[in-house]
Each structure stands twice: as structure tokens, then as C-alpha cells.
Length: 215
Image (cartoon, rainbow, N blue to C red; front, side, top):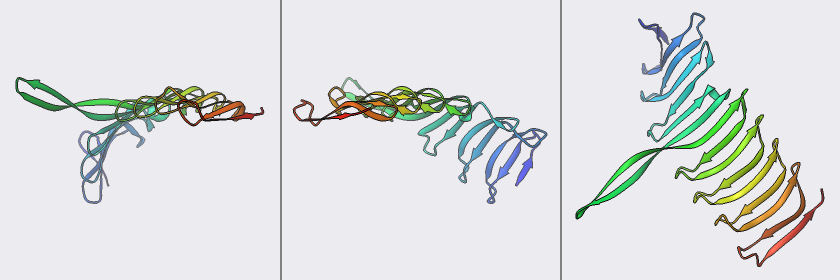
């Protein structure tokens, strides 16, 4: 069902009568301006923006437990997509003989990507919910390009890869969970292993395996 109120806002309802969405349309019936969308419990699920039927501006999505906000600019067409996580950080302090605790909301960007002409382009970053980096790299024309780094949830680096327009190309390194000792080291050329590769089965490099790959 669609109705117009006195402010020319379009109101859409579920069959139960609960508001589903509201926003504006232009004279051609295209979505235009700010739109809000609700679930069947009348909870706000997202705020979106349009320009004569075309997604535009920042979009926001909200989880029902209010722990996550998703924001993306230009709807993965051109611009930046960001996803946020609302983390509750416990703060404890002492006052004379009493210990007090309270929780402080901290918003963490857990993913940031850039788009150009509907393709991934530019820096990419993701984090774990504890705030530690998960991966950092770069895209070009929708493909991984350059150096990519991956981390465990303790913040230690566990892998480094190099890409050339989506193909593994260059050095590759795997680390033990300490982020310092090499576990695997080798090299790719156009997505194929090349040269000498080494596997280390302990951090002291007492046990290892070597294999040579022809180009």
C-alpha cells in the first residue's frame, strides 16, 4: 500500500499496518531524497538517500541490538564504504576504598573500502571487533594490487602477499602466530610459484623443507 501525506512523503506499510518505509518521490515516481526503512517490529533498519532514482550519498544500516552501524557512500559506485562496530569498553577506577566500573561506547571502523565506477579501487582495510587490524591492501580496477598484509586477532602479522592486478606476483611470506618468525617463504610470478620455496615447521628453523619451482 502507498499513500501520500500532506508533506508529499510516500508511506509504505506491511500488510499488518506497520510502517515499512517512508520517503520522497519526484514527479516521475522515482525515489528522491531521504528514505527510511523499518522492520516488522517498527525498528529502524536503514536510512538511504537517492537522487532521482539513483542511490546517492551516505547510507546507514542499523542492527537490532544497536551494536553495528553500516555506512557507505555512493552505494559502492564511487566513494567510500565503511562498516562500524559499536564496542562497549569497560572502564574501572578506584576512589578511596571503592572500585567503580562503567562501560564506554567506542565505535570501531571494522572495514573501509573505496569504489570507482562500481569497482573496488584504492586502499582497503579491515579490523577485528577488538580493534586490531585484520587485513590491509589496495585494489585497482576491482582487483587486488600491490602488497597485502594479514594479521591475527592479537595484532601480529601472519601473512604478506603481493599482487599484480589480481594475480599473485612477487614475494609471499607466512609467519607463525608470533608475527616474527617465518613459516613459509616463496615467490609468485603471474600466479605461479617460482624459484626456491621454504617451509619451516618450528620457530627455531630446526626442521624445514625446500622445493624449487621452475618459471
